[in-house]
Length: 449
Image 1 (cartoon, rainbow, N blue to C red):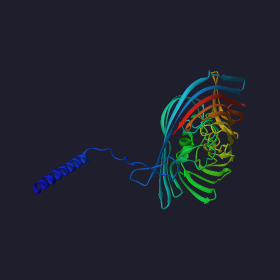
Image 2: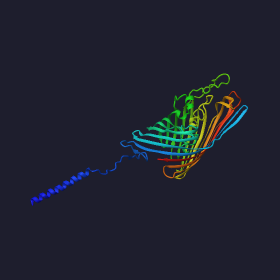
Image 3: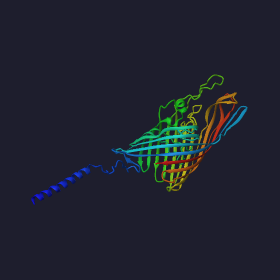
Image 4: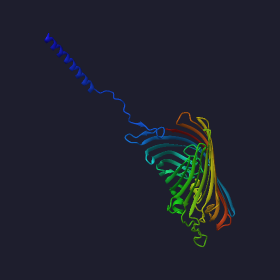
């Protein structure tokens, strides 16, 4: 009996031992692990932000792809009147169709600190296609005519924000209505919308009110001629300030800017038979600009922008760098103004229409001329002219699904240098004017993510 009990205990112990060995072996086998949470949602700054693993910084990655198709028809007219000769030249080429594609990459990183939010933002743009005609913000924001291949990469934004300061490439503190309502990569013209290198400080007074003071890179608003011939390099950056309000009914901004012109001898010559002359020197060494804009939001379906700006010796603040000079042939600061805006209305959450446009005009300014008539008669001197331009457009858009916008847009542009009274030269009164008109149809598809 005792022997039987011993044998039984040995057998049971063996079975238990085998079971334990089996369990240990099973534990060594690979099993499906529970999914690890590598990325944690950050809800502090809104949708789309995630914590960068191992840090307390929230990052949002986004971007867009815009694919545009254009048909543009341009007509140019030149009229010249000199003693005994008056002629008109019309240039009316066939309309052109072309394509532009842009890919944008956006990174927004934010960290909460004892001084508030530390933010860095980046937007890179990659462009490909052909551009033709007139359009603002194609490359530098200047009003220009272009006809050529465009394949480029650019940094649209790249800045740091901390404790009210902004450092880097950002939107100018001067600007308010940034052409909102224009659709496509090649929008309308004659308004101020510039991204440039800045040092800004914004004070938040609460209840929607704020004020900003900034030092901004003057090269961001001037064409090459102004930078290297008139300004002779930047000694002092532009000084810009604004007072702004953002509320439930809309927003407004009043802003001003000071711009250094620098000393310049605008006219050395021409030779009128007595040798070169140097009669004129710069009369103005400072330019300035002011802007006022307001936005009205109606019933969450309609937005109205109205804006006006005036500038003297600072055409970049009118979106006219390269179109009118900083100073004229007598060294006087050239003045001009614009008024513009848009009306955007959503008929349904997915269908909207827009009416948008602007008008600009300069004061009369002196320009040097050198005109060869019929390849055998040359007229040189100084006369005066002025510039006027307007651009109006209408579009209809459809948002079939979230993140996708399809737009059909038509716009008309007219730009003219008209004059001129005779001021100085080797001939009696001369008249010279140029005019360009543009009809353009745009189809734009944009996917944002």
